[in-house]
Image (cartoon, rainbow, N blue to C red; front, top):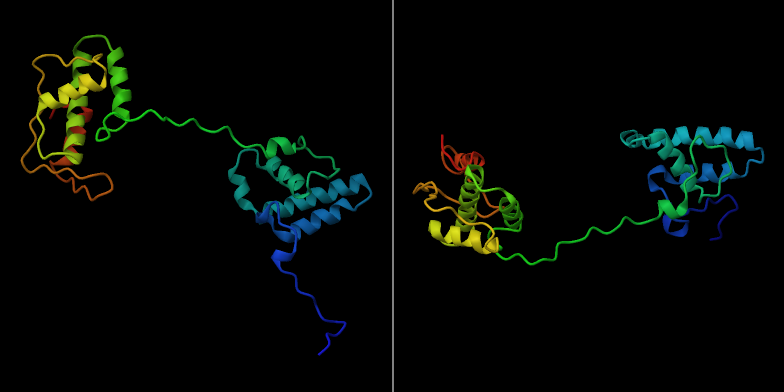
Amino acid sequence: MEASENTIKLYYNTEVEKLQMPEYGRNVLQMVEQLKQIPDRAKRTEQAQAVVKVMESLNPQVHQQENFAQKLWDHLFIIAGYDLDVDSPYPKPVPEVINSKPDPIPLNTKPIRARHYGRNIESILDLIAKEPEGETKTAMIRSLAIYMRQQYLIWNKDTVSDETIFMDIERLSGGRVKVPEGIELTKISADASFSRPGMNLGFQGNKGGKFNRNFRKNGKKK
């Protein structure tokens, strides 16, 4: 059966040009293409302002961005393929700047010497090593030792001696942090429980939750 002359041809997205700004839809693209065909520059600029208002209504989330009005005009030029001769209230965007990729974030490839403590422990030890000798530094070392013992118990054995934690502090700091003689850690309750990150910690009452708060106060219980 032959198609009549009045048959409407359907177009699929796979058959048409890919949208540069999908959030505005293909109708806005058609508006911009028609905008380019207006010969009078003043009339073209006037219609461009109307298209920007339509874009604003279609993409209200743009209001959450800083300088959203300029963003809308930038989007208009992007949709037009940067080929739009109108009087914009803002500088026209440059394709090289818009399409540029951000600088890659350098990754810390230095291996972790003790995974059960984590990488942050080494950073903390660096800060403590720079602290002058005195009560403040001793309190910092004691608080860090209590936290390291907690991390140790999460990943390793059921018990660990204070001396093991103290040796790890001196080893991981490269000997820059010396644990003062006579320092003692608070005793761990027999019913205390520690869980690995991502599991149900179950810290309630005077167990883990209070232990963590005590650590923030230099390891001293109230």
